[in-house]
Length: 385
Image 1 (cartoon, one colour):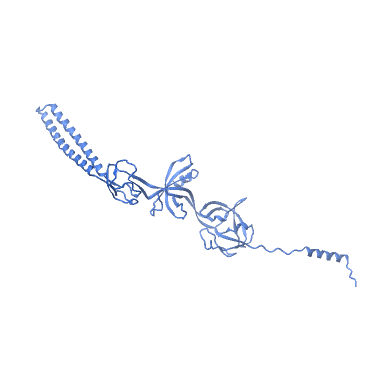
Image 2 (cartoon, helix red, strand yellow):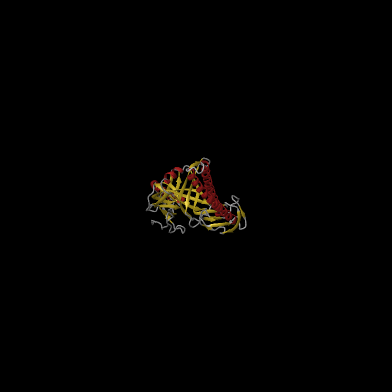
């Protein structure tokens, strides 16, 4: 039996065979991109000026003797904290005691002579009126009384000077502070103005930190420092995160034309003695604080050809590219001035594989699990953190 096909049937069969040959299997759906997200938060955004600083004592005094003599006793141990008025050194005072006693004796003698001369002058003044003595004799008596009165005043000044020398044989602390290395010992001969000093006292409670800010920041410092105290933090260069709080206490009266900076000083109570003279610290000076700013982790902010943007996640677990205006950075977080609201989910890790509309799977990360204050928040896919 012979099968005959029409021309139309043959053409249709050929078309079906061609379509079947060209058909390909549908590509598999793309797997969701694994990401980590955080939630944009509302918080305070301080404006902070950061600078490197050097710790300085509030006062520093090099103790020297004002009199010469043999040092008989040291009343403290080097490194001790001393209070104002505390006895530090004793110098052999016997020569000064003797000089004071002699000056007091001379004063007593001259006081007696001056008193007698005054009485003589008064008697001569009465006798001259009766012509019992001449006017010249009366004038001589008055002049002698005046001269002896001046001698008495000079003797009193000498007594004060000798008492001052005797008192300075005992050296007291002019300020409260911590003593440094002791440079003399009992038995040494000391003299006024001798180098090196006997000891140096640094006042470390309170203490100051000296730092400089660029002149471009100076108008802001002037504006916000006027009429109020600006808070400052001193952070140790060790990087352990410890900080001491204080306040701005000094603004220099000119800009250093060599460096283009302005010298500032901040004062710290330093009750825990964390700051030490000569130490290098990082200073954070807070000029003002914006309340209710939108904050996101800095890792969420990306830069493209059209400017800064973040990836947000919508209700369908898809990525959305959101242009934003990024402000200043505060620690690990960045202020978003425009383009983002509080409570939105932003991608903090995995955005390199994202494109607008990408399906995402929010992964958990032990490093970020349960984090708060701008750190990444973890959740299961499709669940709002």
